Every structure is written in C-alpha cells, then in structure tokens.
Image (cartoon, rainbow, N blue to C red):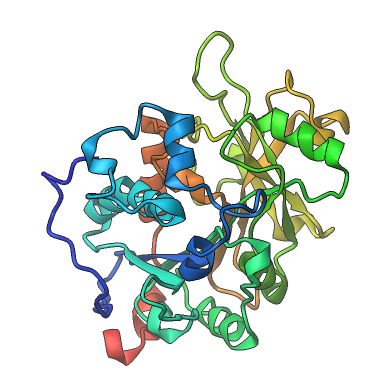
Length: 353
C-alpha cells in the first residue's frame, strides 16, 4: 500500500474526544489483543500465534516483495503481520469517516508502547458504536473484568448505542490430531496453524452481558461455481428491522470464518440475520454433522434492560486483507448510518457534549 496519498499520520497520541452532533454516529474500534504478547511469541511454536512476515511473504508471494515491505520500510516478524491488520481497516475508516463526518477512533487493549486501556468511560463517553475485534489468542488470557462489563452495560442503557462483538475463529480446539488436520485442509490457509484459538476477551464480555453465542470452528465459505466470488449470503430480511442488509448480498471472502453458535433457547432475544454457505467439497466435522451454512451476522435488539443494540459479525468483514466488493461497503455505510434516537442528546456525558 503506497503512502504517497495518505493523509499525515500521528502515533502514540492521546485520544481527542469527539463532540456529540445530533443524528451523527461516532464509531470506535477496540482490538482486544495485547500487542506485546502477540509479537513476542516464540516463532518456533507451531500453534496459537500469528504468522511472521517471512511466512506471509512465502505464502502470498510475490504480493509483499516490493521495497515498501522490506526491513527499511516495514516491521518484520509477527509485528509486521499485526500492522497488516491495522492497515487493512483503513478503507473501512475512510468510508465511515466520509459517511459520519467523524474519524474512527482505534484503541488496543495493550498497545505497542505497553499502555493498557480497558474499556471504560475514556472510550465509551464519545462512542456510539463500539466494535470489539476479538483477535486475542486464548493463551494470552485477556479477560473483560467486572468493571469493564459494568461500564459497557451502563453504556448500553443510552439509546442509540451499538456494541458489535467480533470473536474470530476457534480452529483445532480438539485434542484429536486427525480432526485438527481435517479442519486445516478444510480452510486451506497455510498461514493458519493446526490450532489457533481466538476470542477469550469477547467470550468473557459475552458471558458478562448475557449474550448467548459462542464462536466455533473456522469455516471456508462456498464460492460461486467456476469463479473466485464468494457465494451470496442467506439473508433473513424479515428480521432486519435496522436495514443493516439493505443492498447487501455478500461479505468478503475469508477462508476461515467462525460459526456463531446460539447457546440459549430464547429465540426472541437473538436474530440470525445472515448465514453463509460452506464449501461442501472440503470435509469438516461441522459439515459432517449435517450443516451447510454457518451463522455470520447476529442482532440482539434492545430490551427492557438495554436500550442499545448488540451485533455479532467477524472482524475480517471490516478489513481489506481478503478483498472487498461494493456490497461490503454498502454494509459498512448501513452500519455507520444507523439512526440515533432523539433521546440520545440528553444522555450524553457533559465532558463531550
């Protein structure tokens, strides 16, 4: 990605709160990882770590062979791969920024400089949509503590708020090595190890908030026969009261997406908005159990205890690492333009009003 036409960038700066504007949504991204823990992983370990840039270059060759990716211009090792994730959301940030007039704030649980930022009023006070990207490995033991859960629960009492939780895949959770190999051959991504388990932080947040969902597996979407285009979503448009999926037919292709399994019996509280067809030509235990699609987008409407919305959708839907289509940008704009209730203004904290 060339930096010639990029706007000037700042780094390691304190966040400047965005003032409330009637009818305009302020969006924030929260990466749940400990950046130092992830980049300091022993690269001789096969499982439960991100790829190094050397591995990325080898598998994606020649995509990262230009001078802009060499050691003079770009971080190598695991750090470079994490920066690819940061860079991959720039298109989303641009689309949303143009739609709302606000920059997208980006936070990390523990950042490159070693500063820890739990989810609290420093993030929530000037945020209307919080996107929690669950790309922390389970082994890093990132957990939402009770203060964070309470802060988010209180924030969701404000009308118009929207919490998007994006726990990523859970590949190879079993001790059965044959199943791990089968899952690996199913998704077909050489950069994903036989075991790569994500999302402890989002799982703990879901448990604390009573969200009856669990991220499972890493499933390969089906393609339109004879093309490299992802197969269309199965959309439950009758349930899409927010219009999130107006004009949306597909998300982007990613070879190992989580199934958002419902763990509760209360169907009224959870609406499965989209299901993604699976590549049935590649064996997988989930397919062998009789499934042909997986849950890819879920909405929990407001209830008597919660004025805000809760969504579940994978973080890769908001990146460009795995391609993108016009339909995907439409989804981004729909999310950015969710209406804010008229009562929101009265509930804004004074510090950012």
